[in-house]
Length: 375
Image 1 (spheres, rainbow, N blue to C red):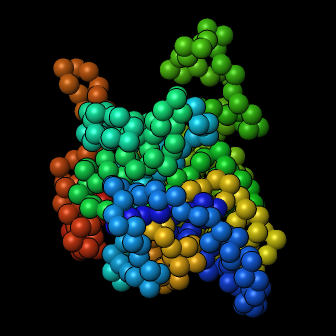
Image 2: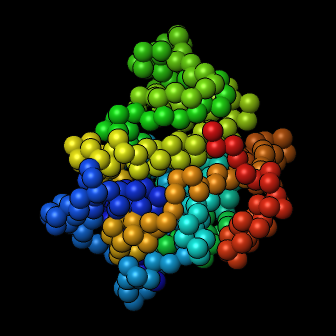
Image 3: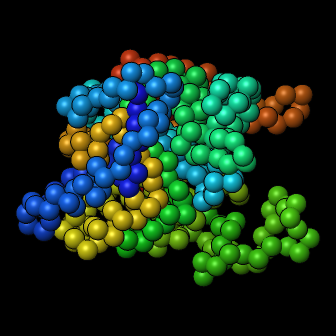
């Protein structure tokens, strides 16, 4: 089944629900009557036939009424990169919505997960074993030294499918971290709980970049930064945009490294979705429009031919309080004393089967250790 992408739309299904709903209401619950507004944010961009996980089918897409659970959505976060730089998906999340369409289960895949990346004819990649965050890189080459992140997303989806057994993704999104900061700024920051003390590898307490050691030239060093560090202490805070984005990108110095970072990113997703639905946003037309403009500049949404309003209506019963954060167990993969990357624990096979069978809730009852603290 072909899956088309939409620009200028929110980056995953929960935010789709949020923005889709708020497009139609303002303060006091009055309907927005300007059809041009809805067109601008949901239907103004043409599809170019890009599919999420495989080769295009007949070109048919689901109608809005056919958006029914269970639903699986793939999300990838990338740093700002131009068309001449291959993208790396440093954050990879999957959202599973059961048939009841009233719950979201969100789990992350480690960026250093060592996997088989399948061959991909479009980019000329022959296939091989590598860290999963390289899948977008291998799939994005379009010739003449240029790269297309949307094409790379296709190979990432195929790689995640091979790993998890999820046959296809019903929707997906790419979020540009540099631009996503503008979304949080438009919201006026985000309130979230910091569950452990974290020192920033990259920023000073004033938010400016930490200087690098002189000996770290173009070749770089593993930890090149020196000087004072921004510190995030345990507790609940209203973070500015730069603080939130900096916090959820830290992994060095954390007891569990990237696994701690995955949990923080999931907590951030839940916090930003909750804020998107807050009265401070939905009843403030000026702030709402700023948020939507920022989202359009930062996100590429693959909606299977359906607009954000279609997805929003389909998921109108989902509440941010009904979002369960999942932690997948795993650890380092060594070969002859050499670190190859991360590997998932054998029990994750049963979890992935539960997703395919749409019985995640019962799986979690038997495996409560999979439920992450959500702050």
